Length: 217
Ligand SMILES: Cc1cc2nc3c(=O)[nH]c(=O)nc-3n(C[C@H](O)[C@H](O)[C@H](O)COP(=O)(O)OP(=O)(O)OC[C@H]3O[C@@H](n4cnc5c(N)ncnc54)[C@H](O)[C@@H]3O)c2cc1C
Image (cartoon, rainbow, N blue to C red; front, top):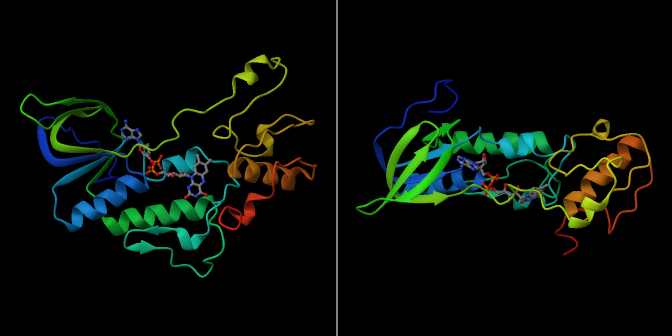
């Protein structure tokens, strides 16, 4: 259903299950519902892979090793199980999974409200009309809003601040000096890539995330 350009109107239709979100969780849910022959629809406000495509920096790579990529029925099948997929490979893997699942997926439709139906079930309001469902699975992900420490409010305007979801490449940043606050493996990864691009020294909190998190924690 996805990718044909036209967004169908959903007015009045009923499904056993509506899955909100076409990321790996929503598609995995669809895989299982499909196997159990449950009538369902997956609604994705953007396109499959959007989070990885649009909200990760260009040189992003997973901090979890490839062998851990075990989407249901579709485990990592490449020849580098101990490597770390880069951004393009992740998107390709996810798009391959969507094709494999052949989910009843509608892209470009945002769910705007969920209410209990008067006779049970749910009323689902979307940007393409309304529908009803016996059950709704919310698989909208957990990283919608950047968590920025309050301390950042006290920095002067002359200091450019970027959250990692806004960072793309070294070009996104002004000329030196560039302090980078690292609070996670992903922060460490973006910092180390920045360092590679610019050949400057970075004080990394721990170590390069390229080693992945499994070897450390
Ligand atoms: C910087 C960063 C680095 C990460 N690195 C790793 C890693 O190395 N390894 C790892 O395993 N995990 C990593 N993660 C975590 C991983 O991205 C998430 O666990 C994973 O994407 C969750 O999948 P999901 O399907 O639940 O959510 P998402 O991938 O966020 O998908 C949710 C989907 O729901 C859609 N959606 C949201 N609201 C609506 C709505 N109202 N209507 C319709 N659609 C909607 C969104 O457009 C999106 O496509 C990282 C996360 C971040 C932020």
